[in-house]
Image (cartoon, rainbow, N blue to C red):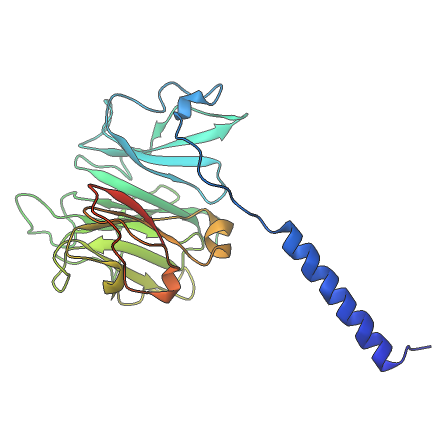
Length: 271
């Protein structure tokens, strides 16, 4: 026999409250960052993870099992190449050059990766190789944004590049939003931050939007946090490296004006 409606509603409310309590209790709470340590301090990690050369632009894959970086260490193809190392049996392996399909005789930097709908990795990066968006940009080609499917031949990203410098692409973990910096006409005085989006990873990117509220007259360079669920659950936060100012933290979706708090040589910003 069915219970009275009021009794069933009361049971449903109690059940919903119980779920809410469980959800709140299981929510992740993150403490402050600890002091930085060398990656080689992880037992078994390759001693070649870091080198005396410039090793930078670090970013992990969405699953946390691959680590990408740009480096001008000896043995590369040009001024700087993109490398990857895998996390195996609790340690990071020797970094491996992604090869001449991705890298060139010029400089590659700022890798950013997501997994496409076909489950293949899609790598975005910037490069100042010859034959970019402006093929007559000589003698020094500007920086353009490229992508590579499954680490195959690099291709210019349609709709994002200009004859100016377009650099440091960072793609959201699901591949549907990208931020990058550019010194195209209309900026506030240096490389400014731009954003584009799409409904599916197979769609074209929207026209880039100038995020003037997050930019400044000083050069703004961008780094997006792409660890999948953290990026999604924390309200889409943006990590910025800026020269000359320190900043207050806001969610990127609010697009509140950046607030300077003090003068610094360099700082990292979380939105």
